[in-house]
Image (cartoon, one colour):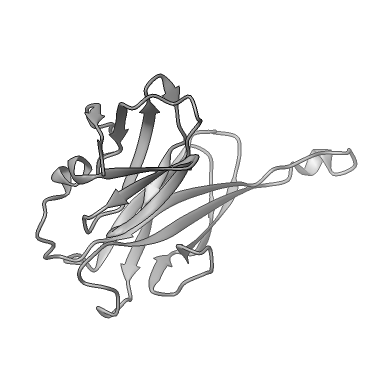
Length: 193
């Protein structure tokens, strides 16, 4: 929230290929959202080049100020067509990279590195509910109940997410989260309610 724009470098490591790069932002539900503007939204990227996308905050402080808000940044790379192969049958794939984009208000009381340890758990019939009392999204990974590996979960701020819990799952809950730098936090013990 304190920054009005951030930058993301896009690199083409293939020296022979040119790509058309298209970028846009979607809200948490997957609908295109104009509250963040990406420039340039469309450009051609030559081989062995790097370009910078600017993500501009156009929210005008209209988002919640007590918690993070999730968006998805999409970057589509469309390969150019080799003109010498126009008469042949070819299959070309466009690759879309989806990256979590969080709007984080400037004055949240809890430091983000303390959020993971606040996560709570509640067992139900065939489910384990993850309860997040913090203002941050928590990406929970390496979630285990005893020796059973459970699905990863994205737990919204001040919200809950549920994962399937096998009947033979152990009592001890352990987990890790992904921090602001994309690294895994140390393994933690889960407290059940």
